[in-house]
Length: 255
Ligand code: MF3
Ligand code: CO
Ligand code: CO
Image: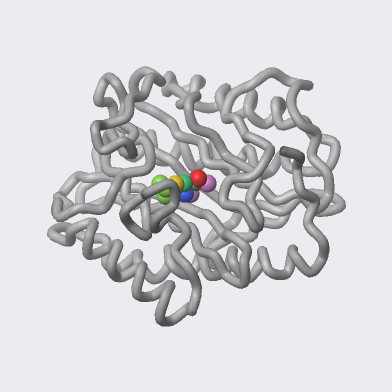
């Protein structure tokens, strides 16, 4: 499958989908506290996306995924399924939102702390966000995706953290997961070259321990093999003539 360059009309729809995705993450923030279940967070996001935004939660029924959002706690790397488990003091959680509006997808995730923060959790969550941000700052026409992957991995390794290799960012548009694959590791000067009008995600998954992952018996939940903490941040991006537009940028964010 080839990389789809978006037309100006399609880009406008991507902007709308990106903004709605961002707004779900803003909306859910105050609900993330000790005692709430991830099912409750799922229900609140589902109702907001469907009833307020008149949009579609992309994860629901995507290849059989049973819920409308992903909630990945502590040693869960990604694709955590909301459940009746309550958030507890000291947890870290990634909430990953994908919204479809007018046929186009927006995809973004961020980390939240529940109550007190351990030094390790704080360092890990910050490093993963820096990995995303430095990747975003490199985006412009002519850059190889391998350059970006290399820089991201180097930043995680500088703090002796590891990068998950089995899951990656992706092209996005009318499809949830389009070409190219956006690896969070790589070799400079390799991989697809960015062009104006491409839209894709960067979503590095950084582990406090070893990089290896396994999938639980539910066929979705991805965890660290060594049970170490894991953190992830994700944005949907547009390659512009001279750089990048972050389609899921939150109002308080400065990249
Ligand atoms: N939102 C995830 C991503 O960033 C994909 C989730 S697929 C699901 O690509 F089925 F688990 F929702
Ligand atoms: Co994604
Ligand atoms: Co996502």
